[in-house]
Image 1 (cartoon, rainbow over the protein chains, first blue to last red):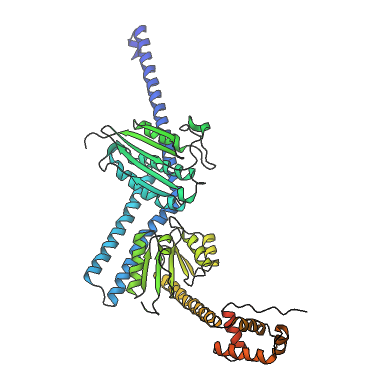
Image 2: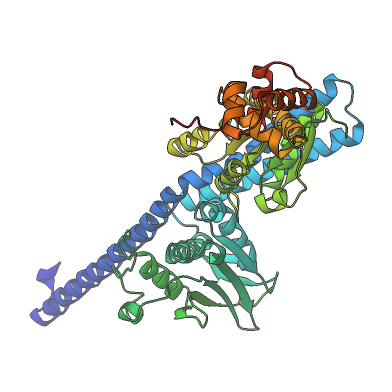
Length: 272
Length: 211
């Protein structure tokens, strides 16, 4: 086709072809970076879940034990002819309740273990926090930490990727319990609180541990910065990037009275 | 509750587990009490009858392991069956060494639980009756006079009347008289029987002076 064009037109066409391929190259590189980022976030999430495996099985064993012993109790009462209708009803109720508790736990774990995230959707921040606390409950107990949850607003919605937000909260929780490794048992308290106003919703996790040292204070959210003996210092960097991609803000500060608080703030979903 | 009542104390901060095990045991006509923490259990008045504890390892506040330590120090007659959702072998070895009946991992089989409970209760009955014997022996020994107690301690170390009389600088007849009074007060005749009561009450015999 080129032979039909004059030289100037030929140059122009060649230029356009080159420009096009260059744009494609840039787009391809961008895509590669994006995919690397997704891999990294996923790896962090999966390794976080791997650490929790033992305590998750503990968490699951509670309802399983309850189901078993309720059913056994029912059978024994029935055998001895003492299974009154109200008692039978209460037993069935307990079995159903514990079964759904086990089911919910399994489904939130499955979500967090998925290879791909679900993308952005409208989510209730309170139920996201609760689900995360269910997953983390046994781990906290194993570390002898008590978690207190102060919620302010049952109807606080944001637009975001649910499992990535959970990932950030899990990261905050595990940092908090690590920071309190040397804290006296009675002071091992993690406070998680949610606050909201018309425009923003924030979630804060406060511990009573060693606080953030001055040496890493300003570079806390950069990769490979850590004060833990174990760990690569990647968790907070990933949390930072997750919140940034949600157009939010992430903060860390030392608290009066000891310990640190990590928090993030996201824009409130308008159409509630 | 009468003298033969036996109580199974369940201590677990997980309400669903606590109440389901309680219900299961009630179906088998056991008397059960449930507590959500070690502190809550310790606030209960001391239970003198036979019984046992079904104790969760990982409790917030005072853990199950801490409570076991305390029970050992208190010389409790209530054996412990540990339950856990997240146990490890070193932990189970430690608890068993300290006298725990068993270390059960949730969700444990009910046959295992019942077997452990039956072991725990029979041990508890034994410990309780030993404790009662001690108490009875102490009460009997307390009726003795200071002089009688002194003679008793010498008797326990195997000294003859003559030796005791010489040591205490009194007449043999007086020693014999005290011995008669001791055996009346303790309601037994032979020296081995007297010694057994004294030992149960924790009386330590005098060491024979080599001189």
